[in-house]
Image (spheres, rainbow, N blue to C red):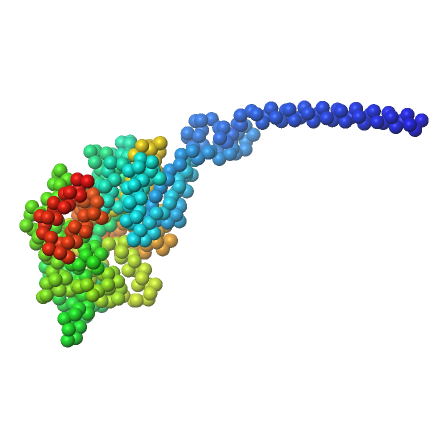
Length: 468
């Protein structure tokens, strides 16, 4: 009896096992079929939702879907801006554009890296297979990239909107034949930074806004020689030598403009040597380092900014960006320099001129999605984003002064700024003639001060470079 019952139990257990196995097979088939069906959310949401940026459209269950796939990659090469400096801008743009992935790379950390960066940009664009879609470029050499850049779609930026919004001097290399080839991120020009203590000791309060008064009266009073020697111990104005006057080229151009010299004609050719006033302008600047009676600067001094921080130069001509370095070193090193900022002198109030400098974002030609790339470039130059960049740079201690805004309507905001007011007020009369490739042209100009080159020979050499 016990054996008979054991056999029945075995049969029952076997029957139950077969039933369970069949049930498991049915469940597995159902799950497999369901997994093969298209999803109802995430990357499978309807195309119109993706296009409209509705990344979080609920599916039929009421739950949020998977994030939209970022299929539009925009690579951006930058100079002096760290990833932390631009991360907020990138995050905000990606949040509003779920299919876009911005990949930023800082290419320039210090000024000495600029030549190699410039060459990488030129080589990359010329190869037709650029390593990025967007490049930051300097006004001194943007013109050399002309043939390899993509213009903005007219609906995003055109010459009319550009001229209305941005300072006039930025259009020289960024607007051609009615099309826009780049948008400025910040601008700059020159002002005098002066040591208030040294001015007070000379019985002066502030640099004159007239070149003749400044050069003939103030600079000699600010310049001191060593005892029993003709060697300079203190400079009234750091100028006249390319080797240790950082912005000699910009000041030379300013003096040419102030002397009514036309630098380039409408055909883009250099014509400055056609005016005798060009020699007058150069000789005036040269006198600060060569004229015995007016000499205030020589090769014995360190670079002008260093001499200023050392208290050996009473006045230097410099940009707002370099002023930021003066502020930083003065604070960090505890130098306690009391300095001021004054407008660059003019020859006449009727012909005020300064030299406009800018950094802009440009776009490579033959993009996979030119409109998408230009939307991002346009976004970076919008007022709100410029404000964010300005505040971020200050917060990150990248600059003590912030940036000088490139937009005309934003200039009044900085016209009362502690450090930038003088620079901001000069933007309205700043000029830039687009030398196309300043790194090649500047060494030729330098020979006006270091050799015997005359203006006619210089003009021929410059025109040869402009034709390259």
